[in-house]
Image (cartoon, rainbow, N blue to C red; front, side, top):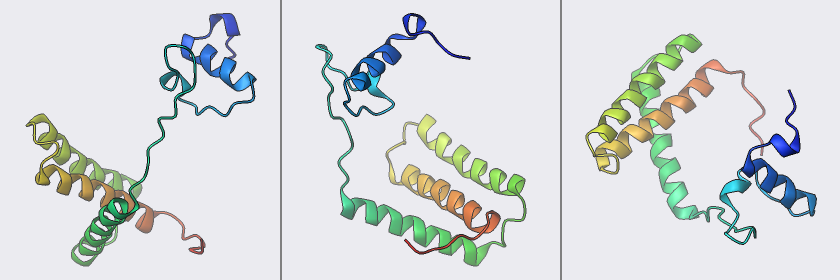
Length: 129
């Protein structure tokens, strides 16, 4: 199904107008226009040290889980494990503890179980960069 330009949502028309000038605009361009229609750069600036810290904690959680629990056998089992961790994170958020250490630990476990899913249930790929 195609959408005619005149029937497209406003954000789509803004994106098309910006890209037709040759300017690179991300897919979420409707969030990147100021009130004058100029593109605003809102890309996230990455704090590499902070990211490495987060990834290190997730890596440690993956290793801990792999040493304690057997391999995930099926995608359904993997989904179930991820869902369990996600529900625990959701409980923290609903209790207004979404930024507390307990929620951070749950978020790390969600990430770790997603990685575990990839590790246990997908085909190995070339690990070279």
